[in-house]
Image (cartoon, rainbow, N blue to C red; front, side, top):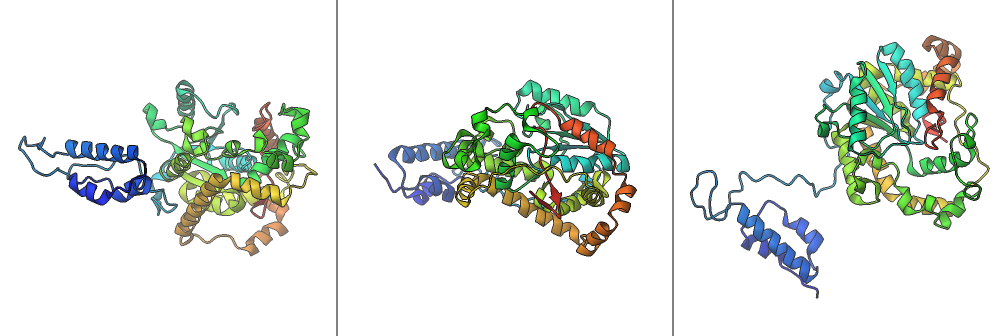
Length: 412
């Protein structure tokens, strides 16, 4: 039975509470009889507990509820906004001595780690890297072990690992500075799809993947248009869990997971960048965490023109159809909403710091191109660093080695 409940009248008659009636209307108006009864019960209970008969502080009776001591519930009904918490106060971040780089698969981590390793020498900080590539979702004991490992390393420290966000204060530890890097959801998904099957110029797929021949020969179009498990909607949400956290609900496509991830970006990640605009990402990092990332844009340019990171584009002869890509985009709707949120937030941060430092011009990039050998030599780009990064990323898990080609802030 459908009912049209006059919620404004009920709200006032029950003495009022600080829960906004328009939110109740949003979810329940015109609902079933059961929903209407539930609303009445909840509002009645709120009216009872908020002092309709007695003031607990003075022991005196009161005809109206005491709303002065009422606090909003910890949950939020309004979705987070990209500009929340901005402009950023860098007085805290500039003193940070512990940074965790959360590596999201197929989002440029090899490029980023090249930069980090060069900066570790220049800016004199320690770089630690986890050997646990596949354990992204873990139990409480494994989370504590992760926390213990990070806290046992010498400071200043930048530590990288692929893991769904772990809230250190939950275990009585201070929250370190978290950073991460993401990319266009469809491009990331396709990069992962092809990398599993074809690898890149430096890595053969048979060194890290155990997919069957029938799946390995499957085209992107067939995977998407036949709604294969690898390409269905349930498997499409792969980036959001890195920011949502360790809860089971973080791994199921839903708006709660999206908004929890967005709030964690606001509250617990100091910088989340985008691969398509790595120059802006590094610009923001240089301002938020200068003790770690001073000189990062120069290091990035030197790596490009020294040819260190040119070989990580996926190898494939398969050309996906527009129909398949558009269908996959629909399945990635939550991922795109998160990506757009992060991109907008990064642009707000870039604007905040642009008054303090100008971005490098196209002319300066051209100058580096004309003098690429000299710049590479000056920054010490060498084969030994290349081998170190390669050694970190060679493992028996399909998600270990990132497949990225970053030239002029784009990725293929």
